[in-house]
Image (cartoon, rainbow, N blue to C red; front, top):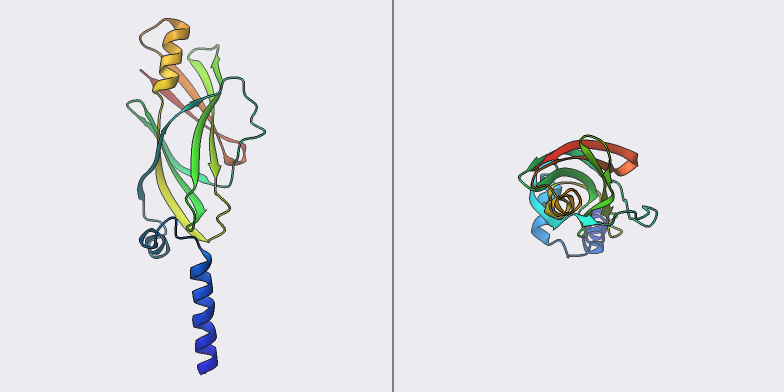
Length: 167
């Protein structure tokens, strides 16, 4: 019995120590205890404008989208992914804009780099991306102070989420 207890403690210690502390002990413990709890806004960056770029070299590790909406000039996306031991990187890339239609369309990609995080917690977080660089491009291209852009956001596994950005 003593050997089993020591072995179990040893295995738990190895598992715990195998994860990098870059996320922090408190965050890791919260993710393990409350895996479905909503994390505060984690990433907050601007959309990256790469019109005409190829998507072949973009990192798209697994994730799912639970909710998506626009608040002022920010695209807010609630995502869920596995991990818990590394900081994950999400980027929003506008790779094909402005597609002529009404309203004008822009194709975006939500890229995810898991940084090789193989831990098994289920993480839910809210991402926020500033869309004003895309709005400024629209102003320059159409010489207009207001507009609507239909955003076609490519999600993991080729799913497309559509939402209108009005300004």
